[in-house]
Length: 308
Image 1 (cartoon, rainbow, N blue to C red):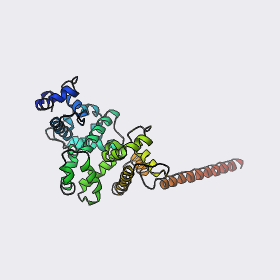
Image 2: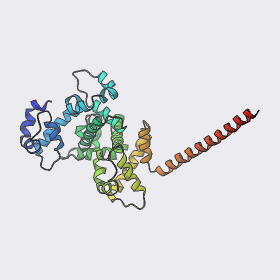
Image 3: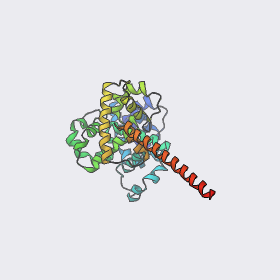
Image 4: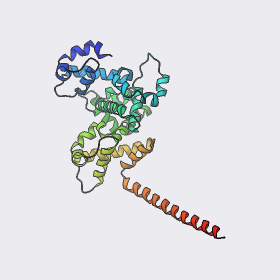
């Protein structure tokens, strides 16, 4: 919906627009409100209205002009199959955004598109209602396993955390896939895992402040700190990290790595990381020595043939 024609939003959020977005025009109004949605000064009714508009936008990327512009090259490149099957007048039920989220986890998006998808992932990680595919495929699981969390007036990622914790109880393959995708996204960026990020905020500040966020860098930093006996992480952070390691180990078994970056991240977050890296290093050394020996033998044979 065009904010310029969204009279309901303009009316409900009139005071918030004056407070947070006095310089914004009609085209950037919703984007500005979204950026200030979680402010303590945000009016609850306006916040609800913003959430409704976010749900609408996440259902069909065509209703999000900022995303469309940022991902204009990425969408046809990575999500061509979805666009081909979709009818012009049909809602896409979040399929395109879900497709882009997978590419984000694989670190394959353009920088502008990556920035926008990161925001969407961060927002939906806090509120499951902003993830149409998760709602579509996990409606029964949410109702049966996470009813209390879903009923909470303020959504802070508790439903997503509930689904992750109950991953082994999920029987529907499509829902399991969605939860596994969430775990994959959190490996790529700790900021899209609000529960873990909150638990480890102090440790990130103390041990990983110099590490550039994104692409799994801060997550790898925390994992290294977890293994370092000289480093004492906050108890809650340590617990959550160990929980994630178990989840990722299970995810790696049921959803093998798709590419080198995914494989590298699985190794870095594996509880057996040191062993795996030692084996890899040893294998490389052996291959190097074999190559060196073969090179010498070849050189020697060549010299002998010349001498004849």
